[in-house]
Amino acid sequence: MLREFDRDLSDPSPTEVNDRPGRGEGFSGDHAVAEVSTSVATPSPVTSSSEASPAKDLLSENAPEPAATEQNGPGFGRVLKNRNFLTLWLGQVFSQLADKVYLVLMIAIISARFDTPGQSISGWVSAVMIAFTIPAVLFGAAAGVFVDRWRKRSVLVLSNLLRGGLVLLLPLCLWVATDWGSLAGWPVAFWLLLAVTLAISTLTQFFAPAEQAIIPILVNEGDLLPANSLYTTTMTASVIVGFAVGEPLLALGDRLMLRLGVTDNGPAVLVGVSYLLAGLCLATLRPGQETLSTGQDWSEFWLDIRDGLSYLKHHTQVRVAIVQLVLLSCVFAALAVLGVRLAELLPTLKASQFGFLLAAGGVGLALGAITVGHSGHRVPRRYLSLWGTLGMALSLGLLAWTTQQLWLSLGLLTVLGFSGSLVAIPMQTLIQETTPEDMRGKVFGLQNNLVNIALTLPLALASLVETALGLPTVFGVLGVLVGVVGVATWYIADTALR
Image 1 (tube, rainbow, N blue to C red):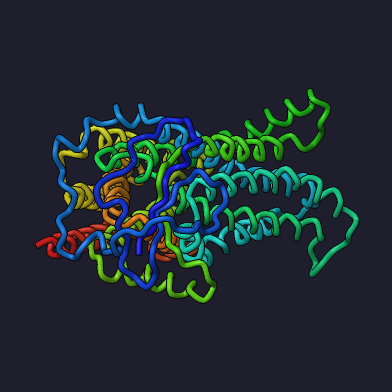
Image 2 (cartoon, rainbow, N blue to C red; image 1 turned 180 degrees about the vertical axis):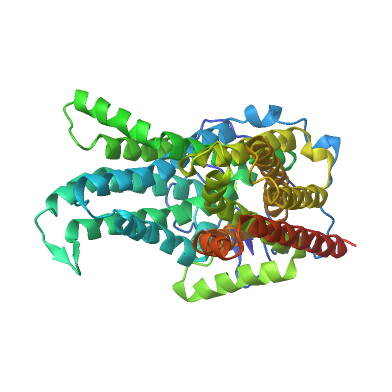
């Protein structure tokens, strides 16, 4: 059953236009759902006060794809006037930047505290990367279950405040454990560093699906495309800016802390404060009413996981959209590795300058996000993704022939990024539009799980395959793979709509 609760009447702040027809209807799984206000900060269940109609599935298999008409919105205008979304966007900026700079901080701490003369730090760094990756692979789907049970704002705020607190406590933990000796050949202080990293990555698995699930609550359905365009642009910029200016930002933080009399811990303070600012910013969100899953017992945990998998099984459009997003993640993860080899082959670049090539792809992705956000509502989602996959396939195929030509390679990488935005933004929007509110956490949790696995495999295998087959062959194979999967998934989705 659905249980409805009134908004907290003591909250004087105006409400953004969040409620849309059908918002209160949930997925017809084994659990009931509850519609609650977000005025209470804790994620505990609330006692019902009135009973509504039974929950039912929002989307049947043959339901039409959301219409692409001029009435869906003029572009970024309404989104940029939405105070709630701008608050979420600002919180995302602080949180994403802290995520990226955190890895730079780990390398700086390892170099300062654990590096020994004549020994490479790659082993230490690899251990940190593994600790950061394990929760992303193991806990994504589980985190999505709890995101559906809890209020999204509470998850967003607490995950950032806890991450900020952990980073700020890290220097103290390392100082206390300095003389604690070694365990299994590594200093105990380093084990504490790994434990903090594992905890921060675990909290990130809660933040990611909650952030994706709250966007459709904050903006009108017709504004989801430009909202996701801004979201994608920020994600891309955080990757480029975070890794590019991470070291200068940490140095700046160190100098600022020195002026305040704090030595050696300025970089950690900078990252921790960035997380805290994200949490405080997100605490001002007023998302209105939410539809939550009422399953609270641990015995129902696996039933919730099953419900998420069952939803994907019976909803072709959502399943196809996730497949395309996973494919896109594979391509860009492989490109991060192959870009080093491409920079090495290009006569005017060094291998260490591969960031210029990745930046070209990022620029293309940002340009595509702006284009889709402004004009994408005129074209059906599945056709945008079809054009995007074909553009990616063509760009990858042509890159096989330009490994000695810098400007052509930069141009093709820009087209690749632009085409990728035609896949990422419409597919993410389609998932948000068609997934019932009380199922979004599970669906986005499963999506993040698959995407994280897709990011991990190419990073591990791309260099080995390139060594065996050569860079041009790898680009050609990737182009064919993207083209075949893109056309096949478009055909499946198009057939399901007939």
